[in-house]
Structures are given as structure tokens and as C-alpha cells.
Length: 458
Image 1: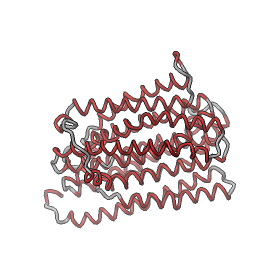
Image 2: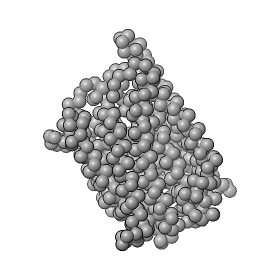
Image 3: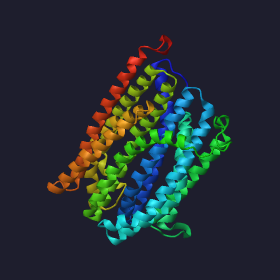
Image 4: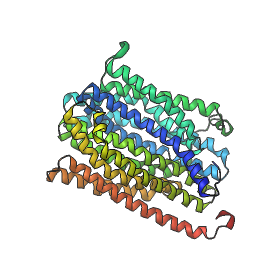
């Protein structure tokens, strides 16, 4: 990354960082998409089982990955302040933290998975598929969290094309394994939805291995001497990572977990409704990769400018990203409005399921717009290392307002399952307004400092 002196240069650098991240995120989302889609083609029970398993796994994965991506603003600030020699040490501490996180997830999952699934009112076939799907994915937890740290470092260096290349290799691996393991082609076992879990676990090992190879042997990583020297675990450094990463992780967890909570609460509805809901959420999540990619790009760029002390440039990048996300959200809303039936047919051949999916997608239009504001705003705040208020806002908006509102509407009105979606829309909209207000407050505080900066920094 380089210092930019004009708006045009900022747009070029922003797009240079953004495009590979967007491709990467879409490809990663496509892994979940194909897991869900191909399981649905195998059978409705498999689609529902993978839906339940995914609803339990995704909040944990994204929340804990959020803690680990706390390394991104740390590395960005080190690069901006010309302290490249400290990057290798910080990345190694991130790897230590990923090992601790992986061990905790495996232990807790071993103890609590069966009781949680038993507590839910699921058909036996759906419960069995969900249990075995999650059991299969557990074999890929260690490399997945390790890759999260490596990718955060790669992206913070501005080498987002490397992450894109790794993920584009992983996608056909995952789809090919799904084809073999879900449907049992070419002599492989016919595992149904469980095969999607096995395929994902293997894919996680593949991307981790490729990332290690790049970091150890390719430029510019060689100059940073990543993994050339051994650095023992430092509680002080782990604490620094947690101070930044835990609020980020909780913010992501609160947002993703509320969607999963809705899916779990909807277990009282029939299998067809669960499957349709999950299909609609899956496609909406794919569209969500656009504001999420902008969010990640803004964390890198704002963090780099703040590390360099260029406060005005940090502000400009922030509003540039949020404006672009808002414009693109209108385009995604049009896709959902006019192509809903075509999208629904991607997930099922059952006319009733297609009709249900199409109805759910109409509601998804509204929270796409809120996501376009809230998610990039969080990215800007992370670049400022202002992370604690965001997770408080997300908790209040999604869990104190959004989820209870959805439960009341679904339980005490004739909206049924759609009531939960209205609750989600309410929570997301309130969260977007509060996060934007927080950003304005932070930028005004820095604006006062900006006035005292030398003229060449303005």
C-alpha cells in the first residue's frame, strides 16, 4: 500500500484492495452455498440437517474468526508506522491464539453438541444429519482458524490478490469433493449432507497449506521473515490481540448468531419451512459478501492511514467505502425483487419450497440496505481501533430489540415464520443508525486533532 494524494488515487487503491477481497469472500460464501445447494438436491431432510448444522457452526466460526482478525488492524498500524520487523512476532502470537481457540471449540463441542440437538424439536433424520455434519467439519477447525490468522496478515499487507488466488483454488476442490461425497460418484461413499461437512474439512486443510507455502516462500512475505524464527507464546501479546479482537468477534457473533437463533427457533415449523428459510438466508448471506468485503478493505486502509497519522485520508476512505456499499445495496435489492423465483429454483425443485423461498427473499431486500450501512461502518471503526462500542450496539440492536420483536410477531400474530424476518429487519436498521452515529462521533473527535496536524498531512 502507498500514500494517496488525490481522490482518484484513493479510489484506485480502494478498488485494488477491494476486488480481490470481494472475490475471496464470494468464493468462501460459495463453499457454504454449494454445501447447502447440493445437500438440498440430495434431499429435503439433508437440506434441513445441513441448515441446522450450519446455523450452529457459522456463528461460532465467524465470531471466533472475528477475534483472530484482530491481527489485521495491528499489522496495518505496524506497516503504517514503519515497524515491519514486529509483524512476524505478532503473526506468531495470532497462531498461538488460533490453537487455543481451536482446542476450546473442540472441547465445548464434544460436551454440548448432543444436548443442544436433543433439546431441539427435530425429526430424527434431520438431527442425525446435523450431528454428523458438524462432527465432520470439526476435523477442519484447526486449519481454518490458522488460515484466518494467515489471511489477516496477507490482507493487511495489501496482498489481497494472494488470498483471492488461494480461495479460487479451494472452491473447485470443495465443489468436487461435494460431488463425490454427497452423491457417491466414482465409487466414493454416498454420504448425503454429511459429505458436505467432510468436503469442507478437507478444503480447510488445503487452503491452510497453500497459505503457509505463500507466506514462507513468496514475496513480500520473505522480507518479513514470517515463521523463520520461533516465538513462544506471550500472554501480554495475546492480551493485546484479545483487547482488539474480542469486541470484533462479539460484534460478528451477535450479528450472525441472531440469524442462527431464528433458524433454531423456527425448528417448531415443518421441515419444508426450515429448508426454505435457510435457502433464503444462504442467498442473502452471499449478497452480504459485498458490504463485508468493503468492511474488510476499509479496516486495512483506514488502519494504514491512522498508523501513518494521516487522519484526513482515513476519513475520506471511510466515506468512500460506505457510499459505494449503499449504492451497490440498491443493485442487490433489485436482484432479489425481480429475480426471486430464479434464485429460489437454484435451491430446490419442489414448487412449494420454491414459493416459500421466494417469499422470504422479499423480506431479505430490506436488511440488505441496512447491512450496506452497518457493516462498512464497523470496518471503518476497526481501522480506528474503536471496537468496544460496536459490539455493544450490535448486541442491543440484534438481541435486545431485533430477536424479541421477531419472536413476538411470529408467536402472537398471523405472520408466522415471516415475523422473525421482520424482527431481523428492525434490529439491523437500528444497528445501522447507531453505528453510523458512533462513527460520526469518532471522526469529529479526530477532526479536532486533525486541525493541529502539520499542513503536509492535510
